[in-house]
Length: 274
Image 1: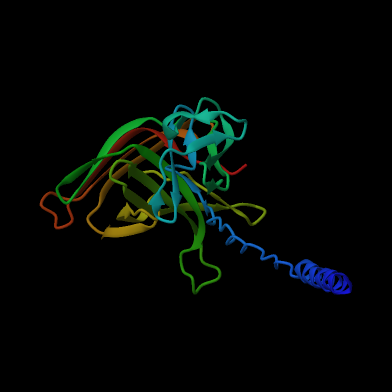
Image 2: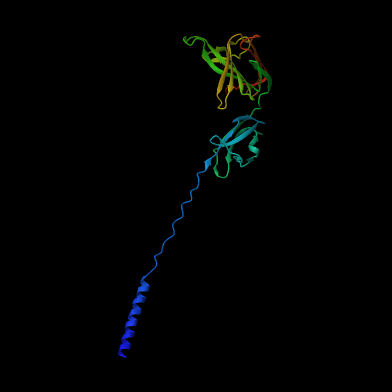
């Protein structure tokens, strides 16, 4: 009996030992690895361009959106008032300055660009110029007063003359003609000068420059003609703000090495100082 009680005591102690050992053996918790961070590609910014920045009422503007030199299609062009432009084209119906932006999902909106619509309608006229066998239409005629200059730059007391440019442009080919010359200037009592409108009789040192406007808006000079020029210039009255009636004819002799002819009659843009 004594042996049996001893056995029970030993068995109980053993069970207590195993029980304690089981409680202490915990399984370590291993955290799952963190997922890699999600990298969102940086959105590229659109650049909005227009084929013209200053137009007249009734003219149409075409917009193009780019990233660098790459054209981006299916963009939305919006006016500052929220109006969406259809087919990236917009026709001016009133004068003023109008702002536009380009947007597209996945891209940063473009900076705004401003289109100026002139109050006056485009000058209308008819004419052409011919240079080295090729004939060009004249779409726009312009007259510019360039300022006063000394006839003799080394003589401070020399008389001044007014400098002028009459410009004709073929918008389709971007060919442009500069008719440059001097005309009289009148010294007034307050010792300032005023110009006299140029005409056939008072033009001095006439020169023709033939140029082409490149894609960057720079003028590529194609030809200079400084001699054997026959010309007729008549600037009429102002018919509306900064628009004058005028006519110009310029030619070189037949079979000339620098063959040139120009004729234009109608309205010229002639900006006046306020």
